[in-house]
Length: 436
Image (cartoon, rainbow, N blue to C red):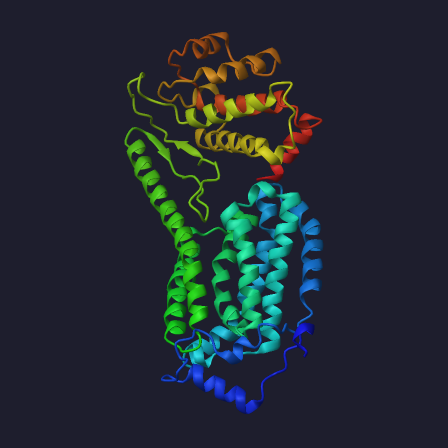
């Protein structure tokens, strides 16, 4: 009579024990079922943890308080994720300790109140990340790794709570450790360690994940958690493949750097690689040696050529009216400016100061026609100051022998003068210095 009200009376202890024996006994007639009938009776009952709504409100309120501390949209997109992954990793410690010291998955204690609260907090984070992300950093959320991932995990945690498996999810929450390391390195780039991230990712999301799949698959009554773990493993494998691809890409960059060093040019930094193997678009600082070999003018490229081509074309495109120019942090003008200024500073330091006799003359290189419009804009503004002979060579695509220090320094100054991204030149300089 109470079914239509959604109330399901709990089975009598004797009946419940009998059902448990039917499904959990190794040779029971219903042992083939992946979940016990006693556990099935919990599917229509919720939990008593009241943490979801307070956690959701707290996370949503935390974003506007912390986001202004980080200039780029990519960093701001990692604020909530870093907080949540840190708390989830810390919450997994007692469950991992049970797994290690109490003999595997059967030794992990339920800790119902704690485990349910942790699951509800994770649901609150997923919900907050989608809500805030939709309005504040939608471009940073991928369809599969963002929207689909979050919706699926809300469902997984709901099933875990209602089936009495919340402690299993808490045990698996140690897999959030590499996410925390990645988030921390995104917010504070000085903390970045590709090797540490790859090591923790492989240890938790590959090795430990496979160990949990095997353990739960061989435990009667716990095969559904094993099936869920199997379902999400391909996503972890895809991410790890991207991580390995990043290491391979950096290895090839080092090989190319050694080859360039044989010709007198040293390139020490490779593009930054994300969790999925994508690059962030930042190239390394290129440092010429004191002695530069005399390479054939038609084939050689100046050490600054790649950066000059990419930065000048992109910045010229955005500076050309009537295209509206958004805030600098949204499309990386300040980042590009900072990189050029860093190149200039590094070259000046290695050259021993400013002076015509100390400027480094690199091998001849090509400057693409795409830079011509930008150079012309700078010349008209009266801030470029490059001799007409150099500009003519740029327009005709003839090989030039630019002075590295002068090119980098004057390009930085010209960009600051040409781009109307800030009200004054001083404001731009202050903003660029703040990114250092």
